[in-house]
Length: 210
Image 1 (tube, rainbow, N blue to C red):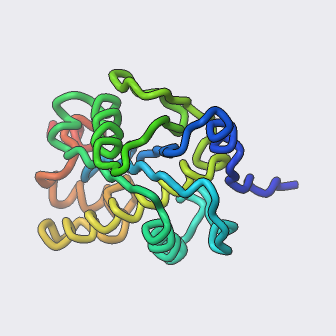
Image 2: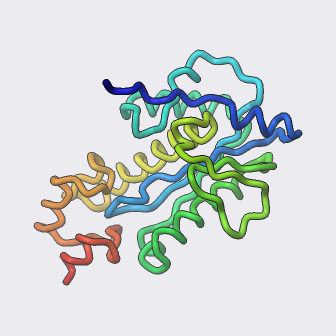
Image 3: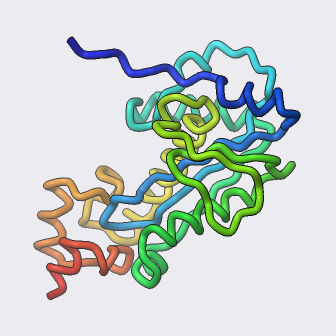
């Protein structure tokens, strides 16, 4: 019997609120496993007391259709205390590796927050070099409402970037697969070779170049 996926809630935020924190940022990344395009991260600070029917629809972005993500992202942008989005290019990913690039995208997102975050809730990770109190939450994008909202905002922002990149680099289907290694993408890569936004250090892009 298939279990229903968990519904993100405010449990982690309430614990931090009880400790005196007001500006609690949920953070998540998208695009880590893609073959082309940037890795992106979002940081979202929600009001501590919020009542909205759409909150019941929030899930990890991977569990939502593109249409639902778009609608929810609009809602999140309207009510959030603060939102930051950070992106790191494929070129920097190739230079420093995907882990460093992911950390950088998250730090860039945090820097954009105004008002700034007082503490961080991050999907799985803790961020080296960031002095704010932070907690890595296992399955945070499925369990924690702020992290789930960040996953939606980051996914929609990156998807929009990939649609724009498709206009600059047509023929790869970037607007459809968003740079992930689908059969269609791999076939295009085999036929056309990599373009400037492909991650040259990633297999099978690296294999195609060799």
